[in-house]
Image 1 (cartoon, protein in one colour):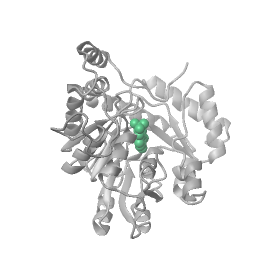
Image 2 (cartoon, rainbow, N blue to C red):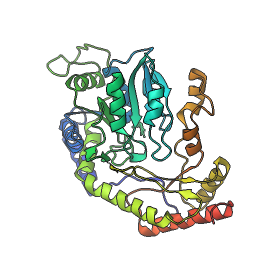
Image 3 (cartoon, rainbow, N blue to C red):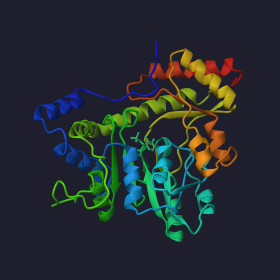
Length: 375
Ligand SMILES: *Cc1c(COP(=O)(O)O)cnc(C)c1O
């Protein structure tokens, strides 16, 4: 028996939607892309949405559309998937890391404020694991120091803070639709923004620098990319958006089962939600009381029982490329490093049953006992 770390939630509706595009033969630049953009914009409550071929492409376009340049600094989190910092490096912008809050694992606003210099132009915060970053505090810092805010919501479609959806707190936000995210398009992403000019620039750059309307096909008015989403992917996205409430509800139910099954297991810390925040569960990550060696033994034990798991995230500042290029080293961000050494991402997807969750919980308790942790 094996329980997968993640799995897309695909039904007949998704299969029919993709088939319909294939029958209609307009596989690119068609109506499904527009429909998908409108569905995401209205769901998160943003004025504009621009579909792209990955979350990373979306982040890259945002960095360009906000006119960030070599020599500029952007403060960001080291506890994330590497793309949230890479998108800055693509443009020669310096990622300046700030440590995270030990409870939510999101950027700690106090640490952010300490890293501001005359070159700082923006804050790029991640709603990590589907937990909203502390946007009210980041917005205050942004106003005080005239900084732009970029929201990496690639893990947080549907998350809310004080009744407002993630993706609407900054100048622009990116979502991602890789198969392990809340909804999938196979590969894909979306930029959302309320700023007319930012939306237009992203749309043009995603489409080889063409004019957003009225231009000739072979007229390219600025440096662009092919970051377009196909109609096949967008049709899949539309079918997923039709089911988003159901999908997120199922994920919430699995998370609730975990919370109750693991609440009394000694030697672990289960996820917490900050006041006013509503998680959109991306992964289910517990933290061990013991350090990295034990954690790695626990991961091996779980895998040997067919329970897939992972060590989300390894700190970005300790990746070889970041050490070489920016001189980062162990000890730079102690809260991030301590958390990263202790995380175990457990199997988590919408098709999991209560039995599956109980099996994982029993496997984890057992792994903890036999590695000399817990009770
Ligand atoms: C998934 C993810 C991305 C990028 O997603 P892709 O679609 O794989 O490019 C960016 N940032 C974070 C935090 C992510 O989890």
